[in-house]
Image 1: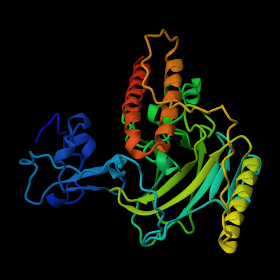
Image 2: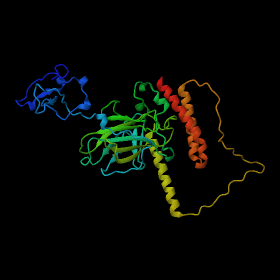
Image 3: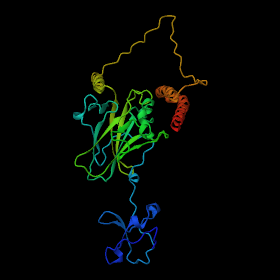
Image 4: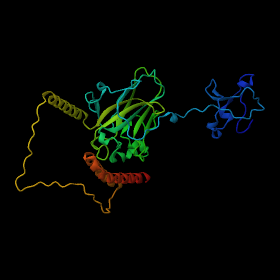
Length: 383
């Protein structure tokens, strides 16, 4: 038996050597323990201390082999791996009947609202809004995880991940915070580092979507509830840039298997009540117009285009020339990145409306701009 590294026998719980217990903290130094070699003979004593049981055929004189507790899985090993690429969007409750609920009756009417008509949250920036999750707790395992991923609603933008704008990214309050948390436009209301709240994604990997992952243990009586907040507005020019967004909630186990998926729209704005009424009114008008057109089936009369005055012709010149900028001195990395992002957004918008056989000419420039923006962002983080 090792006298220094392994320690000495502390006490004999009974006359049977097979029931000897050794305090693991005395028998083996923590620094020297190899967790990969842990065996099956460890247990807890009545005081909750980690102990080692001697095998039945080993005496005090011959005990020269380290027996230790079985390894306890690290909590990080029980988390789903962060998915890569655009997330699936099709809602389904699955076999566990996964549902997502926002109680509009409990909302703060000055800060956030929920439209049942549009299935959309209207919320001010950095305002908490609670979301309730339900599934068949009795049939599900434990722990289970709920992932919230923010995506662009438009199919044309589905392969572009949602990122925080430059202005809010470089706020002084973000100093020292993990870049993955900083770049995510959706945050948990809990402080960074809270147990059971994880931020997924990687700023350096464009196909690593940002998401907030929650761990839920046990089986509640009714529902789980958690509050989120957005840290960017829809109007942020270098971020969401006035595009519609959705939140995709997925129910997963620790292997990443998806048991259910639900989607809720979101609009982050300074006047939730005004924007909610405006969008609902527009939706009702559009629905009414479509119904009238389908019921009446009126013949659409073609209208002649107004003729141009004699001798005057309107010439429309295509704006698809490829131009190369000369070397220009730009003061400020953020200024450069913002300017390039504006050009990137404009080209992406034009490419999306261009026939497929003609849109290829935009892709080279789009890729070059993305690479340059990523290069500049990488240099900023390195500094």
